[in-house]
Length: 362
Image (cartoon, rainbow, N blue to C red):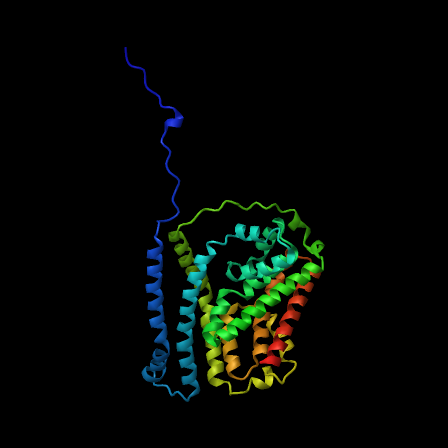
């Protein structure tokens, strides 16, 4: 008689362990590797100015006093400087962003008191990976999660305008004081504009189809190791710097031409403090343009060197980033015309006040 075949119960089948999100790294190895990388970055950064002078005036044989020599040296110095700053900060912010998923961001903003929500939304806009091109899905997600309308607008204004790229470029080209002023005024515009829109009670001017969309986002959030967080930093460099570097090079090229060929003080008559109409003209000029901080900051740098007033230049920059016509077209998909016009009017008023205030005080 043959033995009966044995059968194992389904429950006895060995279960494979859940996948591990990345290799475990000790805090010591993370800090040590980061310190070595930062030191190497700093040593290379310090050599950019003498290297640009050697390439422009030594290797190429250009004269420092010539228009072409000044333009070429400006381009050879500012291009690697800005790109190196972007690499460092975007990598660091990419790691920070691994703690701020879209779902977690919505949970942080939903259910908050409106004034508190405006402040928190504007601050979150600095470190979260959203720009005006993602306004439609982001707006739908916030509305369906119960985030107040005014709080949503504070976030949507701050995210493209007061982000790490703008701050890095301003710091690298114009110094920490201008970067800090831009940060403070940009956050203030986002907070106040969102609060004003929230006070107007214009929820009925959101497109009807938005209210019918269910929030189908996945609320589960994986716990990440430091290995995966560092990978997010590398991916942020690849995605963000990989997309914006042509704008950086193009903006610096335009700035180099202005630096070398526009006569000193010429911009003072057009964008200076004495021209009262310069601020509104700068805002109107910036609206039809479509650029990001990477492309516009080097141009602002060159304009300021040639005599443009700081308030006028910052108003121009803010209008290009936060009030561009393409962004209005995108927002029109989820907002009715009246609310789009109110949004543009409130933000433009804030930008005008910032421009006039800076020209008056500085």
